Amino acid sequence: MSTMKPADGGDEAAKHGQTPVGRSLSRPTGGPVVATLEAIRHLTDKVLAVACVAIFFALVAIVTWQVISRQVLGTPASWTEESARYVFVVLALLGSALVFSERGHIAVELLIQKLPIAAQKIVALIVEGAIIFFAAYVMIYGGLAVAANAWTQNISTMPVSVGQVYLILPVAGALITFFALCHIVGMFAGTEELVPEIDENNQGI
Image (cartoon, rainbow, N blue to C red; front, side):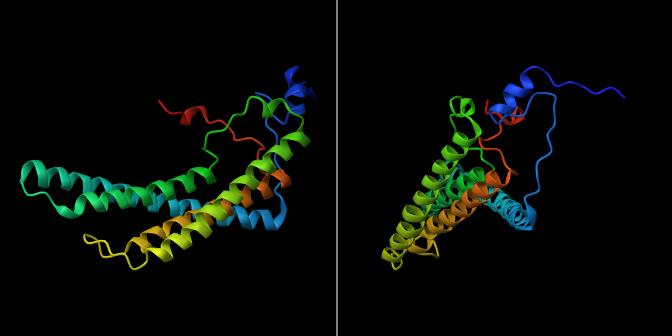
């Protein structure tokens, strides 16, 4: 039986924590704790994806009715502009949490990939820690304070108050914090890459 010898760049790529082209490496499962976290994360991703699609369709419907009522009927609906603004904010925050879970955010990988594995782990931990600090302090703590301060501030064109809409801030912050913890556990358990993987089939045009 003949064995295939990896390409010359295989050892070099492995040294920097990269998977060589044309060579598949099986990742460890990480044990039951990591598997449970991943299951919860995937379920949360599906719920977020469905919610984002529904909110996006609601935003399109509101904006479409705004144009029709203004340009066609000649009687602009007063509730559409304010509703579209708040719906867009909710969509942006939930969408950012979903993108962060899938590690689709902007990342400068050129220098990180040239570092040894130990240094990559330290940088990854610093990055995720900074994100957790921002999400916990600014979005959760600050979002709850802002929501409480504006809880009784009514929106004339919507059946909710400004404070109730602002609750999306701590919700998105809690989601991002959870996803960041999942990233940290996955990276140190070996079930997730230290730097975000590039999907060439999912690039912006």
